[in-house]
Image (cartoon, rainbow, N blue to C red):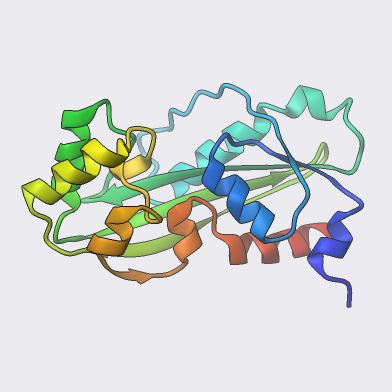
Length: 200
């Protein structure tokens, strides 16, 4: 039976993300792709909760290619995604600066939060969207540890003000339930399976 990698050789894959972590994960899956990013309004209806939020935003990101897809080869597949940190039924986005990052990590310290990634796979005539959820437990962090991480790693472009593959992941994350790669920004195993189904 052909692998996903063999099948995808017949497709033109576009990753709609600037995230180096998503690029790294997609490369690990052996997928050949190019990166094309469009500015997208990432607001969402206030009634949306949990995984429906990043899934909605991923669909918006993929839909930004609607007009261009009509003139692209039929074998073009857009992969768009969005990741949020979710705690107390609220979205924790990217910090606005140093103090905001410190405040976010104090909120996560000693608690469990949810990392939710929405993904949309799209061609010119069909699409499939889904989301993955991982639970992440932080041990109690001291103020000095939080300040050390923020000042040395400057996680201002990361949801929740942290990246699991950095110092804080090794030193402070006590447990992850669900996909590690989802916490990085792309649920690799789920995406692999969904791509298989999508092109079958």
